[in-house]
Image (cartoon, rainbow, N blue to C red; front, side, top):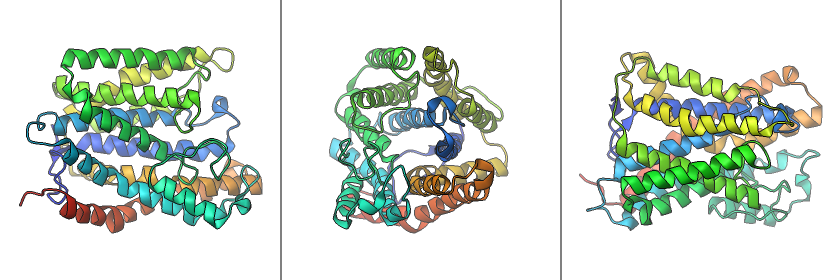
Length: 377
C-alpha cells in the first residue's frame, strides 16, 4: 500500500493512498473534457467523452472509501461535531471560490442559450451567496435559466450530495454492521441500476437540478457509491498489483470515451453499460488503486500532482466552460476551429486549480484548522 503522510496542519485523515489520489486527478480531467465537448452535443446521444459524468460516481466511491478508512475506527474519541467541522473545512473553501469565480465571469458568458445581460447585479449577488452557501436554486428561479441548482458553478451540485452523504454517515451509516451496510449498498445499487436501465434517459447523468428525476437519480448515485466506498473500506484486503496507476488511468479514460450504446431506440443498453461501470468496475478500480505500490519517482510525482489538483480542478473549471460554450455558439465554431481555445481551457483550468490550491485553499484550511479544530502538536 503506497501512502503519503498528510500535512499535520490539517490532521483530518490517516495517510492518503497515492494511487487513488492520482486516479481521482485523471477522473477530474475527464470531467473537464466531457464538459468541453458539451458545446458540440445536441443531446446525450451524440456527446463525446460520452460517459465522463461517471467520474462523479467514482468520486463518491472514493470519498466513501477514504472517509471509512480515516474515521471508522475513531468514533470512540471523535465527536460528530468535530467530524463535521473537519469535513466542512476540507470541502467548503473551494465551494466558495468556485462561486466567486463564477460570478466574476458571469457577464462575459452571454449567448443565445442564456441572456446574462438581463440579470441584475442584485440577482447575481444573491445567486453568488446561495452558491457559496451551497443552497440550491429552484428551476425557473435560477439566473441562467437552464434549470441548474448552481448556475454560477454547475458541479457544486455533487458537493451538496457529498454533504448529505457525510451527514448520513455521521448520524446513521457508521453505526450499521457490515452486513447491514452491505444490504444498504445492494438496495441502493438495485435502485440506481433500475434508474439507469429502465429510467427516462438510459443513463445516470442526473443530480444537477431540483427536478424529481434529478433529485431521485442524484440521491441514488450518492447513496450507492458513497456507501459502497464505506463498505470497501471495511472489507478490502490488498493484493499485489504492478502498474496499478497506469492501468487504472487507462481504464477510466476508456470507460469515459466509450460511445453511447443502443441509440435512442435501446436506451436500456447504455444504462446497462453504466451499471457495469458503477457497480463493478469502479469498486474494482478502488481496490486496484489501494493495492498498488508506486515504485518509481515519475509515477509518484504524477500521482502527487494529480491528487493535489483533482478537487480544485473539479470546482473551478466550469465557469470557463460557460465562457467556452458562449464563444463557440456566438462564433459558430467547429471543434477544429476552437481547438486552441479548448486547449487553453484545459491547461488554464489546471493552472488555475493549482493556484487556487496553493494561494487560497491550503492557507484557508490551515487558518480554519487552527481556529476550530483540536490539532495535535
